[in-house]
Structure formats: structure tokens, C-alpha cells
Amino acid sequence: MSDCIFCKVAAGEIPAAIVKRGDGMLAFKDINPQAPTHLLIIPTTHVGSLNETKDAKVLGELVGFARDLARETGIAARGYRVVVNTNPDGGQTVFHLHLHLLGGRPMNWPPG
Ligand code: AMP
Ligand code: ZN
Image (cartoon, rainbow, N blue to C red; front, side):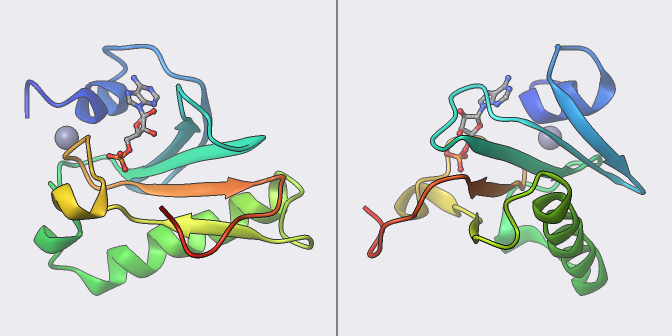
């Protein structure tokens, strides 16, 4: 996807603060953080949204990657939130599947 910004991040064509690389996935800092820790976890190959996912194993690996990052960034014990905004009602603005990992402060519920 030549016009997808997260494909460009994955290809190294636009800069990002990459914090961890895995097999077929990548985590980097959100450019507009909503919490002291706000990371994005993406598959390195293009998937538009959660609706387009076909491989449950890859989904499991992405969630496991988020869990590992939570531990490694020191937010696991106090707690954190993993969010997958999907399509317009879900608040998705970048149409390359990504998990938000948010932590470092108490989260509110319900979300906006
Ligand atoms: P969403 O609204 O769930 O699609 O989330 C997209 C997220 O990507 C937002 O939190 C943005 O701040 C973030 N974002 C957009 N462009 C970049 C970028 N170039 N590098 C890092 N984060 C980005
Ligand atoms: Zn993409």
C-alpha cells in the first residue's frame, strides 16, 4: 500500500520512534500520545482494519507482543489498556491495523 503511512513506517520510509521489532510486527511511539506510555503495534504487512484480519494466529501474536511491551515498559503491574479502533464509529483514522497500548495513568470508563 504505497499511500499508507504505517506501511511507510514499517518500510523505514518515514521516521518513527520504534521501540520493538518482532516477527512480522513492529511497535513505535504514537506521535500524539494520550498517556505517558502510548505505543502502536502494527503488522508489517498491510491489513486495513480488524475487519480485514484473516489469521487469528497473527492477532494472537499482536496481543502477545502488546503484553510483552507492557511488561518491558513497566506498566504491566499497575495496568494498561489495549485498544483497536475499527472503522469510523470506532474512531479509526489510520487504515492499517494497529493496537494502541496505553498506560502510565488510570484510564477512564466508559471511553468517549
Ligand atoms: P486510530 O485513530 O486508532 O486510527 O489511531 C491512529 C494513531 O496513529 C493516532 O493515535 C495518531 O496519533 C497516530 N499516528 C498518526 N501518524 C503517526 C505517525 N507518523 N507516527 C506515529 N503515530 C502516528
Ligand atoms: Zn499499510
